[in-house]
Image 1 (cartoon, rainbow, N blue to C red):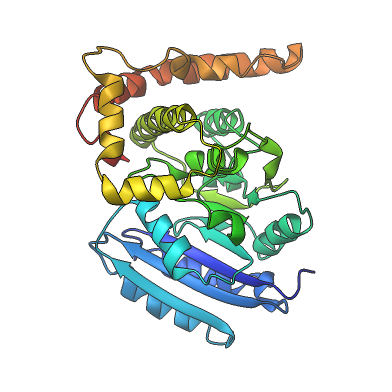
Image 2 (cartoon, rainbow, N blue to C red):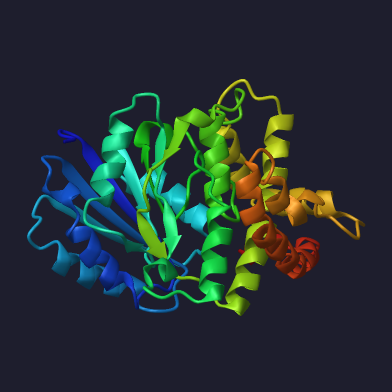
Length: 344
C-alpha cells in the first residue's frame, strides 16, 4: 500500500454539469482515499456555458463529506482549451508540494473502486516511471449481447492501443516532472504532445518510451461513438495528430539542450498566435497536407503480427481504413483554415 504521499486529483471539464455528480461519487468510493495519504481535488471548469462549476462544487462536497482531510478547489475560467487549463492547473492550482497528480476526464466511468490505487501503486513502485496511463475501453464492452457493429468497433479499438503513451482521459504522473512542462496553446489532443514531452525530457534527448506505462487491465469506460460520432472523432484525431506532429518537428528543429518547458511558456506569453503561424507555414499553398500514412496506419500496424492474427485483423483494418478516408478529407480541409488548432 502506498503511504505518506500527497495526491492531487485534477478534473478539467467543459460543459460537464450533467455528469460531474457521477464522477464525484465514483472518485469518493475509490480505495485510494482510504489509504494514509493526503489528497487535493481540483476541478477546472473552462469556457463552460452550463453549470459545471456549481454542479461540481455541490457534487464533490456531498461525495467527500466523510473525507475531512481532502481539500477541494473549484476553479472557473472563461478561457477554453484543455492545454491552457492544463498549464493553469499544473503551475498555479495544484499544490506545488504534491507527489503525484491524477488527471481524470469528467465523462468516464471507472471500472471498479481499485483503479486509482492500482495506478499509483504501479507508478510509485517503479522509480523509472514518470507516468502511468489508464486503459480505456468502450462502454459497449459491458453489453452481454453485442451486435456485429459493436464487435467491429471493439476490434478496431484494440488495434489502436499504444502501451507507452498517455491516454488523456485518465493518467497519473509525478508532479516534479509535470511542473517542467508547459503545453503550447492551443494544443489539440494534449495527451500526445504530453507523452512526447515525457519521453524526450522536453525534446532535450532521444525518446525513452519506457518512462510511460499503461495499467495492464481496463480501467475505465468511455462512450462508444455513433456512426456520425465516429467520423467526427476520427476527424478530430487526425487534425490533432498532424498538428502535434508539426509542433514536435518544430521543437526538435530548435536543437534544445534543456527542457523546452520554459521556452514554450515564453512563446505562449509573448506570441499567442505562434501555433497558428506554425500551422499556416506547413499548409501554405498546398492542396494536400496529410501524409499518406495517416490514411493507412491501421494497415501498417499489421506488420510483425503472426499469420493467424493477420487473417483475423486484416478485414477489420481494411474496413476501418476505408471508413477513415472521409475524415481524412475533412481533416485536410480543416488544417488549411485559419485557427485550425482550435477545431479540437
